[in-house]
Image 1 (cartoon, helix red, strand yellow):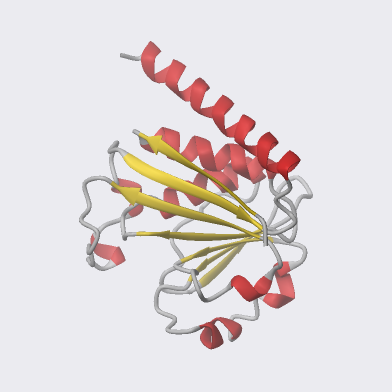
Image 2 (cartoon, rainbow, N blue to C red):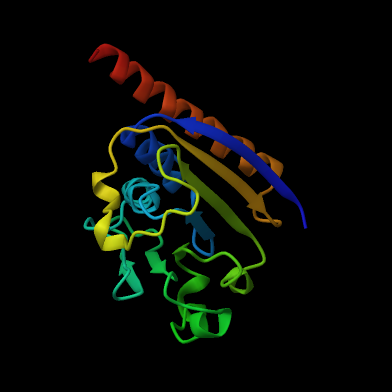
Amino acid sequence: MSERSIQLQLSSVAQTQAVGHALGEQLRGGDLLILTGQLGAGKTTFTQGLGEGMHVRAGIISPTFVLSRIHPSEIGGPALVHVDAYRLADPHEVDTLDLESTAAESVTVVEWGKDKVEHLADSRLEIELERASLPANHTAASWEFDDEDEGDERRTMRLAGIGPAWSEERWNLTLQKINEALERIDALETEHE
């Protein structure tokens, strides 16, 4: 299976959301995104930007306690299905969420989904966020460290497009849009210094 990847260094919440926004504009129904990273690394912040780029209904928060939330499109595009698989022990528990029924027409974003949801699509985008100030073994409960209060700290984002949906052409266009978004944010941040 083909894989394309890139690593980005982000220094602000605005940059994290900008990457999400730019990516959201490029997504289509059937896309599967798997988010990994420590608690408080910015997964929900990234997903908020993604939702803005997709033009889905506002109000994206971590679905930790409900496991799954559906955010319908406001412009006739695909819905965003936002899943938190943190409390699910194995892939069989994910099946109880019935994600297969919406996977083909929606964009499905699964926090903590690595090794649990890959069976939902033949292609996926894996996104790993690592926050510089959090130790690798950070285990605070998600309600103790809210993504929305993460602050402007350096983080590393790794993106890997896996499978036929992430052709070289689509991958390159997506990276171009992400780079353009980061350049706009850099210009705004420099202007406000």
